[in-house]
View (tube, rainbow, N blue to C red):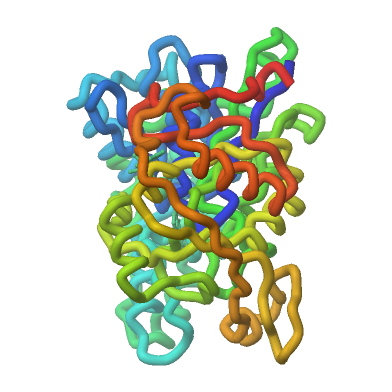
Length: 430
Ligand code: GDP
Ligand code: IMO
Ligand code: MG
């Protein structure tokens, strides 16, 4: 029996939320290990849609323990707002069902502001962030000046920690022509919310170790995707955390031997939201078709997602850097009705064909996809719950993807609805 790590193998929004929700029936504990409320994970259960950003997708099921690990950057106000929103949908979140790592770093209003200031500046690289303060919060964590979740319970120690943080931020703000921040305002921001967070705080590494020893099944829920990883992605057009499977260990405090099965969530085509290279992007009627059929609008920001053909080169790279054991292929139904479907199988750069995305950002913009063209299918795959319901051409498409990326399809998703999912092989039993 293995624990399972779910990661995105493209640029995010692959359908991780749906798959985590589906798998969580088989799990006891669901753990977020990186990112923050920049994530937007949508689950649809019997027609009711749940949108989760900071909460692990396991909260929607009764009887599961959800955990926000130390690798997450935690915005306490976003937490309270999401808890309230979910409560209104009948999802109760209590200290019995959710625990938050004491050593996770906090996102404060000054991080959100800095994110917006940088994105709004006329100079520098506009990343197209979600504006949630993710990057600035991770900078403070790595800079060893972050205020952490545990500090919310330490009223006496907070003023000193705030001073230390502002000793960095106020000179930075002056340089940016922004007003300085008053320590009292940050203290109020934190003390006003502390009481709503502290009942959930725990030593998560210890809790997970106990659960592991007791034989519980642990499901790790990645956010974003491999091409947004701070090291392995299309830098600098990335998020500020490691999104790859290896981070599940560091971002939760469970050792790497506990990771088990790595499930790469993979959309049957490609999307990206925000700036940066996207070799197979289709700024034409194909892109419009995929965007409309796939409802490709961001969960967090409502932005239109850029759309393009499946890029087997990128996913093969993701299979390697994550150690993917199997794929969960999603949104196959979006391709229903196309006459032909293209798959990128290599790139052309300076007259040569290459089989991986170059690390250099300029070269990433210059590569030209080499496509194979497959016949489409007219019958529908939408809502299929058995392999035998799939048209032959759709099966051929799936088999070809497996071959090109070097990993088998473990799960296949054919609609947003929880149960429109085909299980090929149970990752927990692997
Ligand atoms: P995540 O960030 O990886 O969790 O993905 P998002 O939730 O941001 O985006 C995926 C979107 O596709 C959501 O609206 C899902 O409800 C939807 N979705 C997931 N799987 C399928 C599928 O197999 N078919 C279709 N048509 N939609 C899907
Ligand atoms: P889920 O978990 C898609 C993108 C942003 C931007 C870049 C940096 O739903 O798949 P950030 O706010 O993190 O500093 O933005 O990363 N981005 C995502 N794109 N899905 C996500 O999450 C994303 N989270 C961040 O659009 O390009
Ligand atoms: Mg999303």
